Length: 303
Image 1: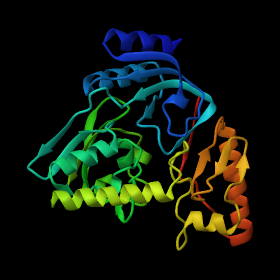
Image 2: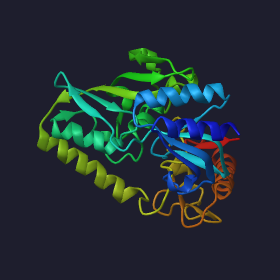
Image 3: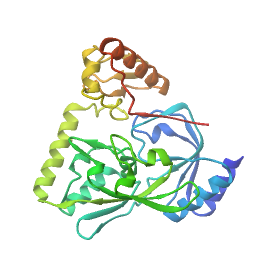
Image 4: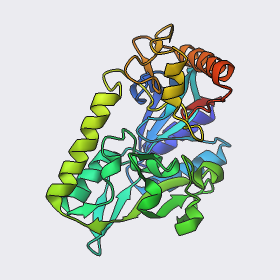
């Protein structure tokens, strides 16, 4: 099997390699079957090497960040998963106002680094459960801010193993998308330009937004974040609530009783439970409101 070759090659270059890894342990939904092989490169050199080896074996790897905003199918991923969350991700301050960090770094840790250096502009992202790379990939946003406001460059590796970068308008940042969603390149590094601010004010804003998340979002249950994209002129959660769907369940999946824009795993939910509930919600909202809800959560099926 080519998976065996990839596993042996990765182990040989010092890359962490595991077989038959439960993806439920690596997603915020706590749902998903096994990945055939999971590799965790410790640096970009190892990452380039395994990407090139995957190409030799005609394998398209799946790139994993912090596992938010995704639903892994129950059958698992019959491919090589590359885990970008390194044990010791790098982050540094450049020119006093620019943060450069590894894509696999937790976004809240990036926000705390900005706070420590008295930089404002990332407060909106504090509490977002994803990795920095994932935030860039989907132009994550909340509370009036988005990655587009601060992201000036992404460095990447293409699927041939070549290094490159996109800057400014090349990033293609718009509502919940970026150029990387279309080109398939692997984000390795983010460059974010912020502004000097008052540390006490930055901290207060971060805590205020975190408290708002805790008050309004169902953080006590596993989820993938907001289930649906915001329809033009409406809020998905409001439409769903108006249709009387709060608390509606399929198996272990439930429309949150706290915030109807979230589908949560109340315990033992399968990916199929979530998909069936998404379809039911879409159908009801379309029937009653004439509006089609587009999922923000990505269904991942490989192999």
